Length: 114
Length: 112
Image 1 (cartoon, rainbow over the protein chains, first blue to last red):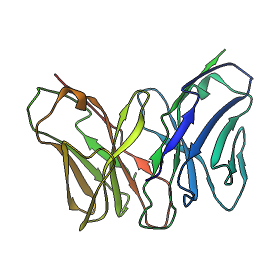
Image 2 (tube, rainbow over the protein chains, first blue to last red):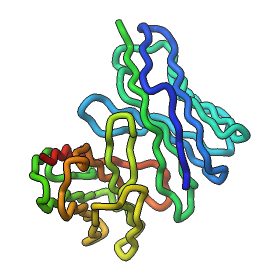
Image 3 (cartoon, chains in turn cyan, blue):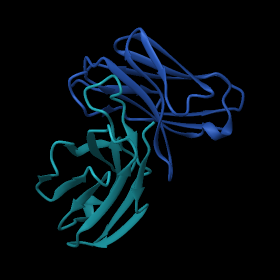
Image 4 (tube, helix red, strand yellow):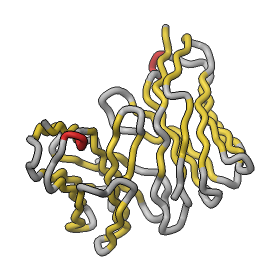
């Protein structure tokens, strides 16, 4: 089955700096890669996703890049703000098939210091 | 608003007790999942169901069972709870033609 590794496990930045979280996956058939943000005491929420037919996707201050050859993808947050502090999870799945379940990474605790 | 509801929100139970966690959704999604969250381990899949007649084991199904009573309801049972099942449990749903999950609000289970 799929295996997703996520690094770093914790990340501390100053407000205004950029933050990068990286994930690798094992199943070359995976073609859908979402990122979830979980604030303290709340449920995970989808913040951005990318499909294997594109290499990069941006949404305001967040972006995701995908390298299919190397089987890794990354989340980039620019101009970080204290409200970006949360746990972030990457995930992978085979979109559009009966295998559509997500396999998650271990999570990254991001702390943005004012 | 259409949503995914989990009950109970918090539960403390004793070792050896049977306990059921319930999940219901009003999103009309066919696919439902149960995950557990542990610090440093992320979200790990326990069971999933792609429709009422379809139940599949995930990566950590030992010690758990599920029931899909209807399209909108998916329950997780711990037949004989043990302390290492202490965790935060999430139910999630997804649509056949959509990729993202909608998560429930979670159930924090403590087994003492």
